[in-house]
Image (tube, rainbow, N blue to C red):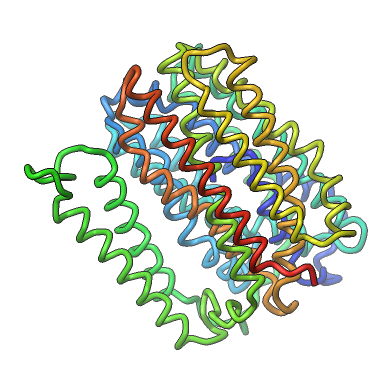
Length: 480
């Protein structure tokens, strides 16, 4: 996902890993930690940097609003659909092997993106990047759980989360500077040395343990989820872009996006049916939804991270196109978000441990909604009086919610299902950004005053969505 808050949502995957086997304890813990951080940073930095580069990519490749949506969603789609499958494949074939394959695929895809002469090839590269991230992300986190034990495990996860937050802060700033000085293709070239170092360290210091007795991979479930999300995303993107084929002469929607949306919903319903028949062998065991807290947590996550992802995609776009910021200045404008989250989330974690997760998970999205309302002042004003207050309030709200969300996800199911529950919650966060980005085609295709007006409508919609997220937490999440 393309938000600075994502490391907090992902850390539950590492916390849910099974106890460390004695034969995997390592004599080089720092090198193992460095490897997982490098691998994860590929996904975190790339997701946040591309947001800042969208205006330059659009001008270079002649992309309209729908095309720019696919530059983001080409990455989020396979990551959302295949994240659980990537974790299961690591359990069966070895986490080290899947991590190295994921890093290698991400590097090759980054090279394709950097050299892409046209928008379709760039989107193709982004899809491959998302598939690589779906392999490396869950396994880099699970490796923390399987190579460390006791207090060392907690410290390693804490360092990983802190570096992830720092990557979220530095990524847009560094990416913006590269875009201004070298061009947008540099934001993909920079992945290559990072990936090469991660591969060298991984082959040297990581140990592996495949499980031949693990369940067969749920390939039918993964295929149905991928096709369903792809059809739904394409239909929403075309319908919201106002481009060719999205509307008929009478002013209504054309049949093609409507058919794609209906097909996407049908495939996702079929996915649920297949998962129900598969039982505990499913990629997503539906028995998890017997917990009201688990259901409420994931609906809350979908709405909150969907709203956040949409706004953080649009803010740098508006600052560059309307207020004529440089790419590096637009990246710096987002800096308060990861900084505040990194500073305050650990304190909120301790507080929520005493009072329970329900109150912070309700209050956090309400504060975020207030920040979205403040964001309706962005566009044509001074940064210090428009953008900064909105970013600070949103950051405070997310800091209130991020740490309790990790704890609540792990507490909402039994220990045997904590891994799949945390992985699903991380996938849901990305799916929220995926579907909301699909609705932004019209905003990304607007210019001048029309862009500002469309952005303000989007900010208001995000505020309403955040309030709905708070309502989900209040109604369905238990403090027990």
